[in-house]
Length: 150
Image (cartoon, rainbow, N blue to C red):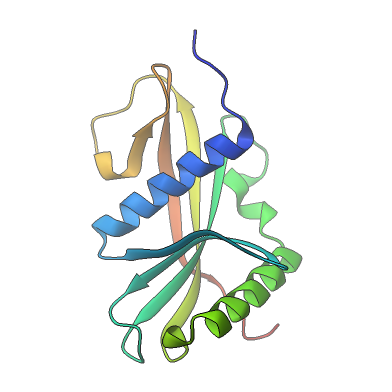
């Protein structure tokens, strides 16, 4: 019998899967679980140099078990949540001025926890949890929302 993971532990594993997959796509991790008064940025990923040629992605990771009712977490990213992420990203850029000229975007990674053995296809999008479950990157949405109207 496998020990039950808390929602926080499962979410952390989902972030690991998303960060690992993004690394295979040429991104590098700048920060993870970055906290401020507005909340948390799950992943801050960079591609290129910290200047006008570079790109920064603030990635919101939603990890859900089977039987969820919120489209693998997508519905949980409300306008209010988007506004908090936008404010957190602004504060992040103030504290990391080397990224002030970089192109920034907000991405969403939807991770599902499934029962059974890990399928052999596309291993970069899968992460074993235990003998009976695995995580799969269900969807990755680039530029999921625009913070400019906040």
